[in-house]
Length: 358
Image (cartoon, rainbow, N blue to C red; front, side):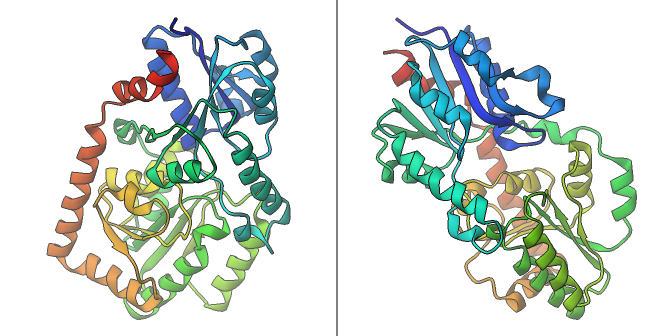
């Protein structure tokens, strides 16, 4: 008998978060397919309060006939709840950053990541199906002992990026400077210091009228953020902008005013901003780490050498060589076409079939 209740469980439903957006998209597809499907979260951003039910209400739907898609997270009450519940479990894994990246900056988070990876292994025997948003993450599930695994890529509504942008952000930064953009949390594995180092060479030796836009939340990572600010002062850089967390219309404005997207992160389980940048027609230059190459799908420029002088020169070439820039943008259009060609509802049904058709 096919289960009719397929609910989702998250540690947090956050505003502007790729995991939360994916959960909402999955819910929409499940409901259109006739399933009862709610989202339960331990913490909910006020803007998202109408889209989720509190975690404690999950007991009302929990049963051996209920399928739960649990978006695996570190050290959450949601995880402890579902591990003991009778539901049939599908673990959805978005990667846990190795703890070493946070030592010296955020010891508490380092501990959570360490224990989170141990919990990942503990969930293997409890999980009927492990889904990951990249092959890189799927292999981590396999290594942790998950018997049945598959890739379910993050679904993006590319048309969403055509919505209006913030006029304030656009006015502030559409001023003739070359804007080099990075979008992502300001955390150590993203290697923001490498971006600053590259930008220092680019601004000093290539294009003085340039700006580095670092769009992402640094809350909880103040020690790392302070270290970065100190580095910017040491290098006497002009126009390095840390925006903090931004609203969606601001984010679209930052993509819209930028000339190039640069990512030098050294650990990515999947990297949604790479796809977003391509959707906005920005040339993407990214270091080949984790699932970056998988996310790019042959688009953009994939770096295997990120010496600052080499990357600064590459930015100069992409900006100044029209033929190279056109070739990069064509490669990105092909990558986006492959993303658009994914029939996500059909893929979701296919991936869940071993659980729903048992």
